[in-house]
Image (cartoon, rainbow, N blue to C red; front, top):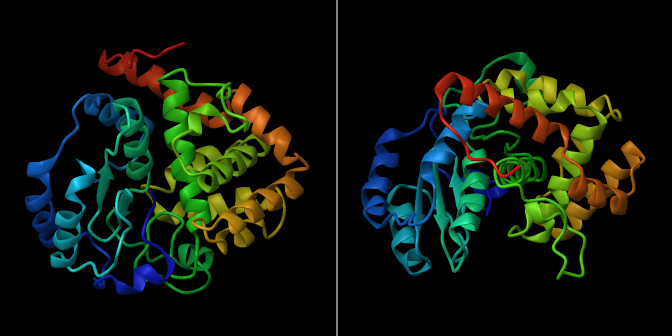
Length: 309
């Protein structure tokens, strides 16, 4: 699971306005969509959830693992020169397409993985404001998505995406606590992610508990990147420079993710063991925010998420 970042971004064909390349997007989807296999996945509920929360909905396709060679070839033909390990779900920011592999996962877990990749989605238009450029290290990124630019950001981005998918499982599915047959204490709502992503999500959730203003700022920044400044300011309100320190971390590296958890623990004075337990046992500000959004959406539309209370 993840998003192209760092050095991977420099291999993408560059579009000066950073608009979605709809031609190459269509080229990729023409090959992959006939193989779309979302059996058992409640796609309608996911679409309603994304709309209710106010997030962008990128194009996506759910595939069997055996199709990896087909995907690799199609991605290359669409002009994306990168290699993704077999069975690894990914969001391609320039094409605004999420590719999710089913593996041997249950439909509920596929939904969880799909939400993680959808959460990486971005608004298509490139922001040009000085405030945004200042946030992203003083230089305008050539290709970006959310917290990611050519200089880093994958820790924040992967933590955010895992946080969103965990909130979906917690608020809609009623998944809480820890897995009693496991020796670790990772919150069950995050299970199915690799441990480094779970670490990042717990760190992000801890920051949101310490400063709940991060929640709305973080969600608004997905559709209006100029508000990224608010995310930076709210995280730095916990400890000056914390956003920049986390932004520099590689979210796909175990050591960096532990460093991120350590940074957050030091800034909030909440030890990582306590952070794990709180995240497992107590609904966080994001859960509350999303639950309220779903309440309003259900009242306005008549749709029911059939939440497990």
